[in-house]
Image (cartoon, rainbow, N blue to C red; front, top):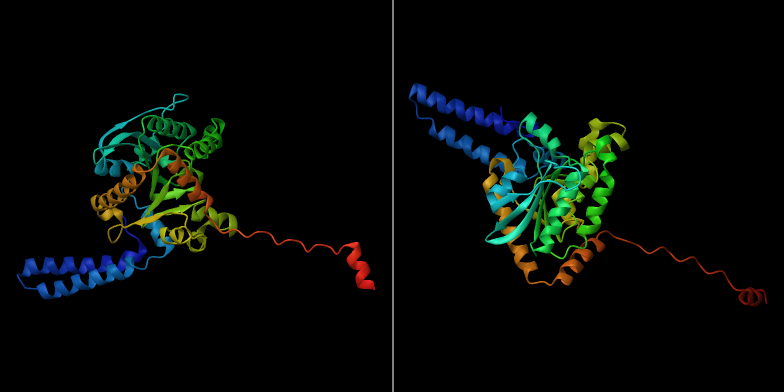
Length: 335
């Protein structure tokens, strides 16, 4: 059964009416084409109305849709000759992060992305897209390889966060992510990141220190999930909807705050309704930026990435304390 959301119920109801009319038309051999056409028109208007004014919480629901395309799907649609590379050469291979080399429009690149599973077994194998430290070390190994052979790096971000388990902490989860933040900032090749679903916390940032951070229209990028935020601030995890409104974590909000650089359009209703069209949109944006950075020197690429993060946020200099009057001024004042 296909997953649907509460806000989509009016569309589902119209679809049922259309199906009933079609069925009646066939069984009773009656022409109901005009009624069906009116309902189809009403459905299209309703779709435009609903999907054109989604709330932050509704966008988060779409970002988590179980049929939403994952990194492997986009890799299949966008790139040629993808070859997966395994292992961090320290502990093991983390299937939650998909890493490898490929080509896009004939140009060689390195590709890295969080990967969730479709079935329960796949999700167990890939840890629901929550990477362990060996995943981030594998990602950095591939990034360094890309730098060595002058390949641009493309990352797909789609995780609720890095895995917070005891074993991951014992193997240095925080250190692995921190090392990636440091080393990515100094890579001599361009790095382009796309948030394709969930962009949660350090798990997302561990492969997201990029020259350009892009987001699909119905994705989110945040220091914490709305449920986690609600549990901490409101002492009630069920208030995730209210937290999502306050956190400003949707693509539109983050573009306004200059945290991201561009929003990539999705088909009306979400990427899961037309994965190939979404992949086309991503590929067009990637080609544009790859061409732009192809004309830049290594120094310019590093400087561009530095300035992107350095210019984030709004800062105010602290007010200077009023200087105390000198002894001479006090004496003159008394006279």
